[in-house]
Image 1: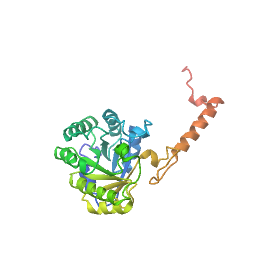
Image 2: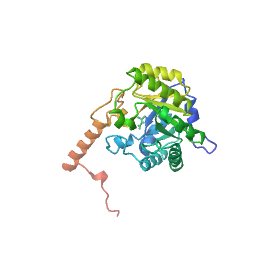
Image 3: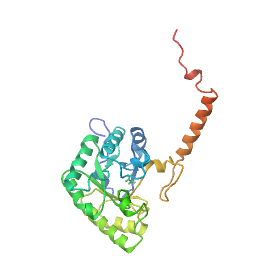
Image 4: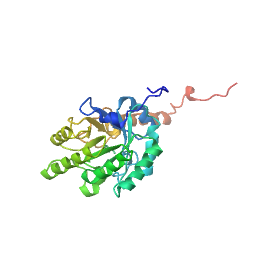
Amino acid sequence: MSATGLKMRLTPTRIRAMKGGTPIVSLTAYTTPMARLLDEHCDLLLVGDSVGMVLYGMESTIAVTLDMMIAHGKAVMRGVQNSCVVVDMPFGSYQESKEIAYRNAVRILQETGCDAVKLEGGQEMAETVSFLVERGVPALGHIGLMPQQVNTAGGYRSVGHSGEEVGKIRADAEAIGKSGAFAVVIEGTVETLAREVTAMIPVPTIGIGASVACDGQILVCDDMLGLFNDFTPRFVRRYEELGKRVAAAATAYAVDVRSRAFPMEEHTFKRRS
Ligand code: KIV
């Protein structure tokens, strides 16, 4: 608690200090009500660019814009008192130059009030991460499977199977580990490599599909809640089946409306005498 009685959010510095300790608990959030529900249970909430696929029905994260990320970042910040909030930098907002990355990261921090930004990339992005951090922008790295590279990588698939991939991910982890990033998301990466990288770098690794060896875990909230009835990736554990429950509730509502069982007396306004 602060002197004003307000609960203080976890800072990127405190997340960094969780290296090797109790695993970091992290989920994505995109809206105020969901952020309110998740906040007290999580150390870190990520306003991921997965919002494009999860809430907007996009096929990838490529079309997500900076304005979308800022709008959802603001929404999440309205619901959070405890967790460190990180907002994803969307495709095209940081790759061109470190100066453009800085300008867009500052927009995200100033307009949302979040604690840090996340950007995908290994060796090629390490200089940009350092540029941001040295100028006051806390940054979370993201290596392994990088969804913003779906068009050049040829799809979404786990990485670290070939000697070439192992060498690249090791080098990416080393570069981002030294860049000043306070932690690194490692996605869709084989266990042995995730374990090696976690032992090798001085900052926490937060895994998604990267085994229990990481310093923390993150999942897309809607996957974890079972809000989709179709495909579930291998690395997701569904803690609920909300998709099925929503469908059952909508079915019951439709039956009640069609049979005039809803609304009833208690839902109805009567003229005051
Ligand atoms: O956009 C996102 O949700 C992410 C997580 C999957 C790590 O980057």
